[in-house]
Length: 348
Image 1 (spheres, one colour):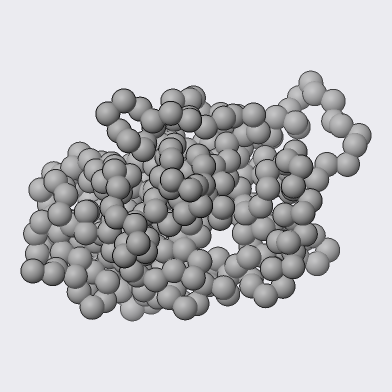
Image 2 (tube, rainbow, N blue to C red):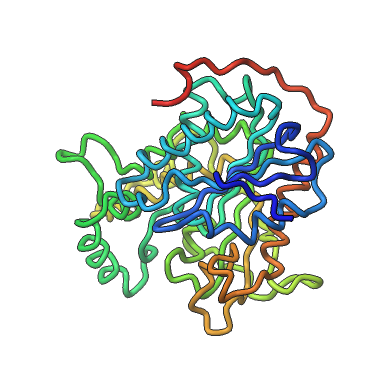
């Protein structure tokens, strides 16, 4: 029997009304609810927590992902608030974003915190991104094709506010405000993410044309991905490297005792460093995904089982699901204070 509801909700091991854990799946640019059909089915059927899981695929952003990150995140926020008002027994919230959905999730976590929802009405559990452009979309600093990619990004950004956001071409006139991606890495936004129990990310090492490894893994220049899968898994290798952050304060090029370069620095490089510096405060568990596509072209879609009619489910979707459910299982039996959602809290 198909347990999928018309509104994108999936029943877990228990009835939806009795579920303790809410898992929200957020698709990316030009995506639909069907992008997560495979992963949602695995989550629904997996060996999850005793409290039961309600898996919800966001539908509010279908056919409207080009108007910018902030409007999309606010639609996700409203959809989550509506869910919480209908399902009073939910105790934990997990945000899972693919591609642009991961950026939506970062902004949504902040908005929910501003509403007073996180840690009061519901407890943050898992924050996970799958092939999401945390450092923006484009070529990394120092690459030969970087100039060409940047010019192409500027042309595309004329037609889409979201593309301007992701390529950091959204600087206000006069430079009074930094790009949105930099704003999403400020103390207030990162503090909202710190409330989650687990921080997971998956990054394709090859074959991801939309979101290369360096940006989806939040990696500094010079750090290389794992190229061989771990024994016992066909695709996934945990990235065993220490946190590369520098704590609160200034990025390394501005630390005391270092001379500032007199040469002009690309603003994109400076912004990327600020984002890395802030996001590395979080205890990320990184997973490198190796060789999903034989022709190295469709890794961005295969990693979540998108276009399931063409690509069968792989080990990676099972790995993502088991990682999420594993964290939720550790939360069974823990109490969280609940409050009622008033009409004024149902989003703007």
